[in-house]
Length: 207
Image 1: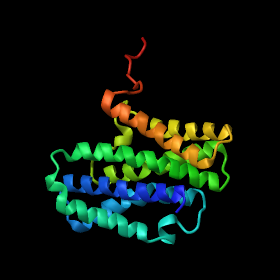
Image 2: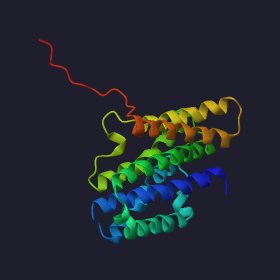
Image 3: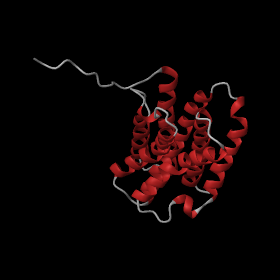
């Protein structure tokens, strides 16, 4: 199994866990758990593959991804009540999922020889869109849009760091690992230390 496949697999499983935890907060039934988990797990990768015109979409080519996401949902369904703070688990698991999904998106774009701008955007899309769908469906404030919090900017920085690494003629696997490390370091710093970016503040209209 090559590194991009490992990254896709890891992102599917960890994103599925976050989806199931959010479903538990919404008190859904077991089918709702599975639906939200699968939506979160494959949402970003599906949009990525459609935009890159990759056929078939990764989970259609390998349906085991859906089975793993469903298994994660079932596991959370029977254990979620044991967690003291499910939102804290969602936030941290989501940070790990972001860190593996972004390089997976970068790898997919590089495989199809896309322009660097597209490579960065595919990394961002793969890392953020599944979680965005999860939060919207479960009526949560999307993590990707929380005021001033580093999230989508972490994905962008990670993807750019991976591309810069490639300019030094290092192996693609090294670039993907740099991408993952940069993404997670920034996201973890945002969670732990409150790193944020400036937010828009309205001003009174001029006379």
